[in-house]
Amino acid sequence: MNNWLYILYATLIALLSFITGEIVTFIMLGIILISLQNIHRVLKELLKVNKQKLENNQE
Image 1 (cartoon, rainbow, N blue to C red):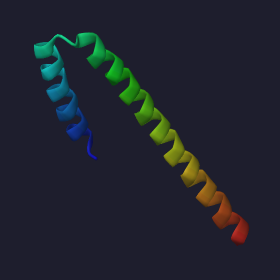
Image 2 (image 1 turned 120 degrees about the vertical axis):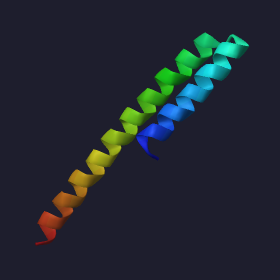
Image 3 (image 1 turned 45 degrees about the horizontal axis):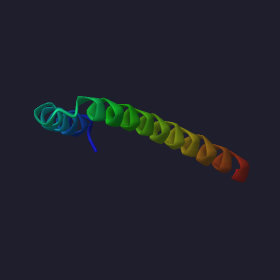
Image 4 (image 1 turned 180 degrees about the vertical axis):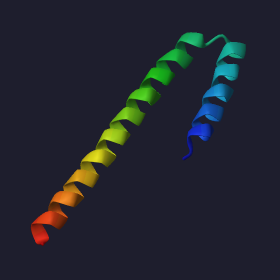
């Protein structure tokens, strides 16, 4: 997914949480989503490094 889709999604949830009064829930979900994004990025980097090591070992 593109970065602008995440921004749009977060904006829509922020508006909905503001209307319903669930601001704390929105903040907690935001922290969780940021953490999951960081984990995903690190896992992709690890996969890339492991693939490079395998390619180097096969040569």
